[in-house]
Image (spheres, rainbow, N blue to C red):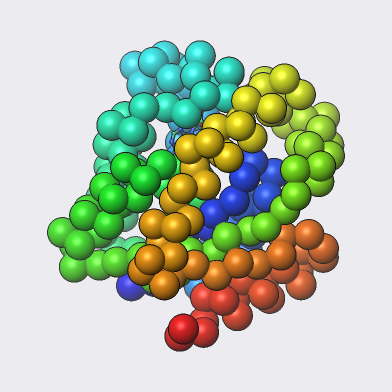
Length: 190
Ligand code: AMP
């Protein structure tokens, strides 16, 4: 199994690159942000519980997020691997994911960290907001999301560095060039 974590702040290009990766490697894409948005759109119980958090750009509690993620993985028993996009976002989520995959005799293969500076993130999200209409893409909410990333999520990197699984890829430049770099990172053994 090939299980890849695509890691990076909001606006780093995780969604764009995931779409290309699933095609090339025949993987199942799991974006926890997309799943939450789907629950909100369908007005499920879960959707009602998390709507305000998403609107404000605040992380959903770990237990809720982990349960949803595990359910999604379990729904795809035939998958040859997964791309995790926007998960894990805390060390507790990373630990839970490791445990869960181990229970399925599987593991994370690589963590690709997309590196994009804060000014570029703000510029990209302002562009995206024009078409996405996402409330959390508005400037004040975006500041909260970037803050959540740099206070909580960034600690996931040393967690996987200890396991020697992290590959840093420059996320600024031509989309296809960045994709090539990601593929190279995924395919190199060390
Ligand atoms: P995203 O589309 O990945 O930027 O996620 C949008 C929002 O969904 C985030 O701002 C959080 O409110 C929530 N969310 C997505 N993934 C997670 C996660 N792994 N842990 C906690 N909250 C999450």
